[in-house]
Length: 411
Image 1: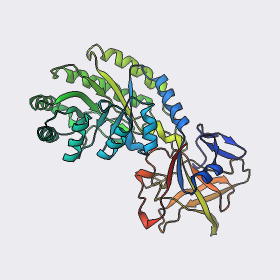
Image 2: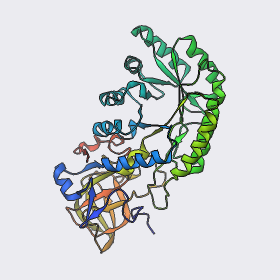
Image 3: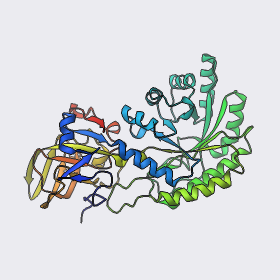
């Protein structure tokens, strides 16, 4: 058995018409002609909107949703997100520029990361963006930039809690971490923040990401709210904003089940109602990237050659690892698994064959699919990699072997 068929009988975001996958209601072959080249990434704006509307229906009405730009920083996507979400999470001055270009108010942006440069701190202070301080020394650095600029800074404290997000693909909190200030040091950090005269904007608690277990997410959210209630005792004022992170994952592989957001939303509504008694006026934020865009994007690459080698079939495409590192299993997978795939212009193909799909690079790591069962394909056909809207092109070594760049489109 292989884990190669799409997770859904037909990908839930992309319908099929006359054997063609439709992206933004455009047949795939026609979209490829419109783009003018392969490989390319295509993101469906309607699919992104449906995902966010569904999320809002499940979550408490008062919860704010921030988009983590790191998941997909394509400028058109960021512009679109400014119309759908309540704010942005930033991880660099480059992302801050993208965000400010959209017209999203700077007061609805937060800047996180353990290694902010002095110039980045200065830019965020000048823009009015909230800085999530990740160390006591960073508080001194922020104050130093404030003195140079003659401006004050909006500062939240990122907390490294003593708990972790269980079953998370990546754990960002709990134990010794480069992210945030250890929970037990927060009272001292608050005193330092006040003594430096910085504007306190609240707390940021990010336990982990890519989690499909509703129970684990619920537990971490409850613990985050409880932690904020405890820390409120050390605050000289009500907590303006509490960012409880994200963690909602997407199903990439065979057997993965989508997280039950209704279960998460119901539990969060109850937890927020209880916490509000101790956190009057506190705005609660959830910060999501991958969950909002991953399933709304595809990577499309064209078959250049079909060859046989010792009983196996290889489809050689014009793109691979250099454009989509994650799909080749080289971005954190311990055991390589195939992303869900399709032959996008042969969706009605009846004859199946087992194939290996490889890119054009001179490395055995350039594998998009290993022994995948797909409709019979030929050179010129279009391979589609689903779940490609997040951590795709921007997380890949695009300059590797000086291959042509991919194109990104929002349709």
